[in-house]
Amino acid sequence: MKEVILLKNGEIALKGLNRHAFEDRLIKNARRKLMSVGSFHFRKAQSTIYVEPDEEGYDLDEAVDRLQKVFGIAALTRACVIDKDFELIKKTAAEYLKDELENEATFKVEAKRSDKSFPLKSPEICAGVGEYLLEQFPHLEVDVHNPDIVVMVEVRDYAAYVHGSQIKGAGGIPVGTGGKAMLLISGGIDSPVAGYMMAKRGLEISAIHFVSPPYTSERAKQKVIDLAHKMCSYCGRIKMYIVPFTEIQEAIRDQCPEDLFTIIMRRYMMKIACRVARQNECEALVTGESVGQVASQTIQAIACTDEACDMPVLRPVIGMDKDEIVIISRKIDTFETSILPYEDCCTVFTPKHPRTKPQLKFVKFAEDEMNAEELINRAIENIEQLNISNS
Ligand code: ATP
Ligand code: MG
Image 1 (tube, rainbow, N blue to C red):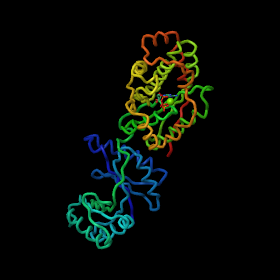
Image 2 (cartoon, rainbow, N blue to C red):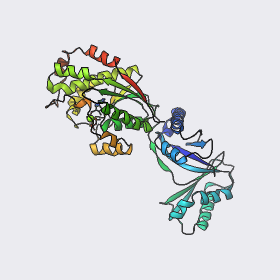
Image 3 (cartoon, rainbow, N blue to C red):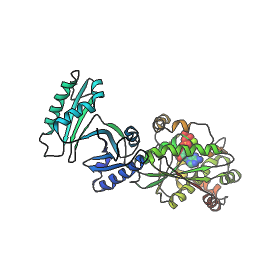
Image 4 (tube, rainbow, N blue to C red):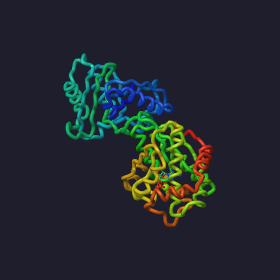
């Protein structure tokens, strides 16, 4: 039996004139995801994208698994492709969905007919297929409101398709249709989730990570690279920038009041992230901050961090509780890596009593003692760049 995968667009359908650009991007992202599974042909029609394998024998379960992580797809399913012959359609429905029909108690048939020359109308297709399935599987009952399985028959221009219930896709809009953003990624739970959430809204994600050797280890850095790897299943390729931060942290320790260490350090992170973002065509920063989680995430501290950069800072988890963030991090498979106990530069030289309501004028006064421009330039000159992908 010849099989294809059908992708149903979600919000893309609402995008009016941009719709083609969204669909093309979705296809490009999906094609890249399937590269290591096989060679596929993509065809758009109505609000469906047909993914047709160029050869038989590809692992379609693996393909579906990968496509389930492509943003812009609301639902998807494997389907059987056949000629538009009603007898054949009925037989195929019984054969192709045999296992499910044998194991479920109730079903209903739905039909879509975009080929208006097909002799039967949709309600007639449903009635005919339903009747045939009841003969073949006498234990089944029809339930039009809440069936265990929906048998779907689509009669299209090229062929007829038969499939069972669809599975849920990743939702959102295709990565890359909303521009680029720079994620400040730490080894924690929150920032990978923040990156995932903004990728879901169509942003292509680059990532910046600050390291402070010898206070932070090679293993801690590798953990963050591993996290970025995991994010790739949803975000696609990620350009990653590793910034040496030791000199700046030591300068802060030597020259600033202890209670302002953290906030000044965070302002340096933002300044550097902003410049690297701009050099690489990113138009916003993304962080995993959540109000009230730690001293540097009070609203007053956030006001001070925001002032250090001049592009929008997106904080998708800002109003979420930790347990809500954890649910997403488990779903995207970053949780187990995030909880590995390696150090982060944020915890180097942490003050005993960080100021929770820092005032910008005192922060700036303290910073004036430092040679910021020179420190920042040197850190940026020594950035290590990595291309992360998992295809
Ligand atoms: P968790 O709270 O679970 O540790 P987290 O590390 O993401 O998660 P914080 O340490 O509170 O949270 O840091 C707040 C945000 O600052 C992070 O979400 C991340 O965006 C950014 N950040 C922290 N440390 C770094 C780092 N070493 N490099 C880049 N960004 C960082
Ligand atoms: Mg952290």
